[in-house]
Length: 79
Image (cartoon, rainbow, N blue to C red; front, side):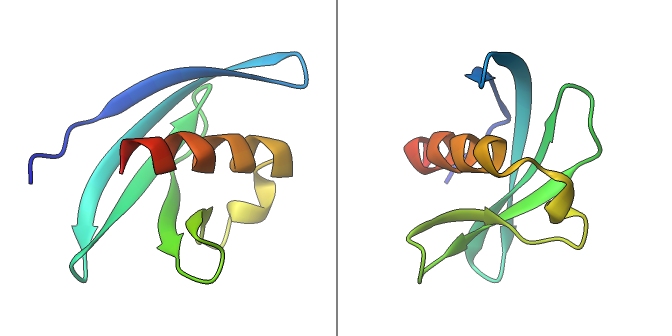
């Protein structure tokens, strides 16, 4: 599997976001190191119970919920 960095733009609640997502393997699954608008990196991992990617690191509460949802939607499309 070839994994490549992805960039995409989102507009959430009228605010533009430039998102960078870097995939990496962890325990045979793909996770993403994600930053937006120059933010620190957040780790997104697949959650079977939610059937989507979710932010899992200790700072993930700093991501606005609507932004996290839209990023997860985009990551799902990459998988």
